[in-house]
Length: 102
Image (cartoon, rainbow, N blue to C red; front, side, top):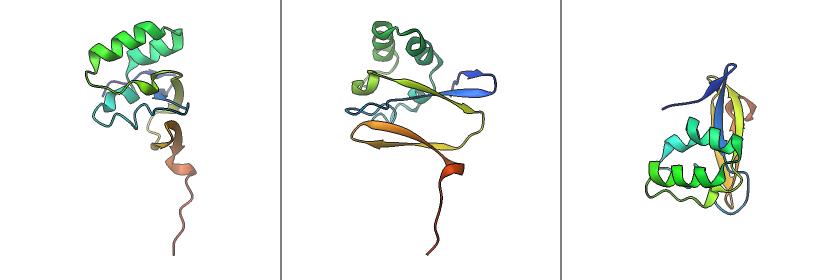
């Protein structure tokens, strides 16, 4: 999977807005979580170009979460999951999760 790395950090794309998830609502398209071109469009605020790119590169994608995409930069090798509630996604780092034992 192609990822954008800068200064030892990987760009992770997620949708923090309520309404529609990004990667969580598109499990058949795991590449949208890291796609370097999407990162560039988001950083430059090129919403129309982003829409065209996503539609052509990922046929059948649900694009409801495309509005308000954000980039989180995580250190290379960081283990994480994307959680979703009513379309709003959050990033949870494995080392930050407290596990309990019964």
